[in-house]
Amino acid sequence: MKEAEILKSYCQVLSDALLEVSRNGPKSYKVLKISLADLGDIASEELCNAEDYSRLVETFSSLTDPCIYWFEISQQTNIENVWNSFRAYKNKHSRSVPAMKKELPKNTNILYLGKVKKGLLGRLKQHLGFTNAIKTQSLQLRHWASEIGLVVKIHVMEFEQENSNLVGVFEFKLAREMKTILGTHTT
Image 1 (tube, one colour):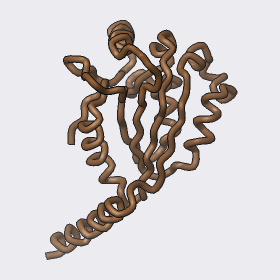
Image 2 (image 1 turned 45 degrees about the vertical axis):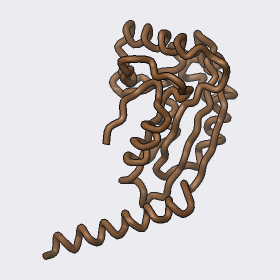
Image 3 (image 1 turned 180 degrees about the horizontal axis):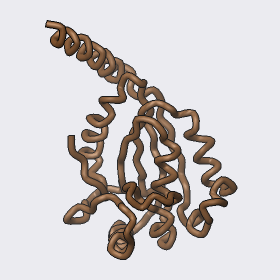
Image 4 (image 1 turned 60 degrees about the vertical axis):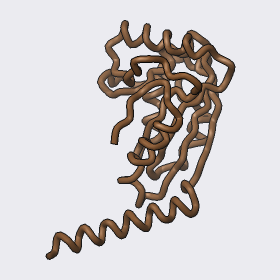
């Protein structure tokens, strides 16, 4: 049966990709700390001149394969203030933002975790709030987090292209373990 052979062959590709990650971890791992207060008043057309954004481009532009990324709150911050600021923004604006859990998760400083199969820089730009697309779900950080002086570390794990269909599984597992403040994750 031809279909069974196709599935067996594809399972071997996935198996090999998983084995590679289990042995060596991600292809690369990078972290960048940025202050959202510095991006709050920048017009979209001026973004390329912003120092923090230039560092973001410099740090992550070489990552072109599938990635998992997360935003870690990096300074001593009252997580409840973050939660309330996000909720106030979500209730006032029509832009699509991640879901809020029913209750504020305890003992975590991971704001959000996501995945991208390609286009990491574009996706991070959306999360920072520099997009005109109101229906694309993103954090919109500059629109609410800059007001509270939030500083975040952006973590990015890049995987080999063969893992593009597995990053969703990796995202689900990491999000459950990290107990993200925002967003829901399903398989």
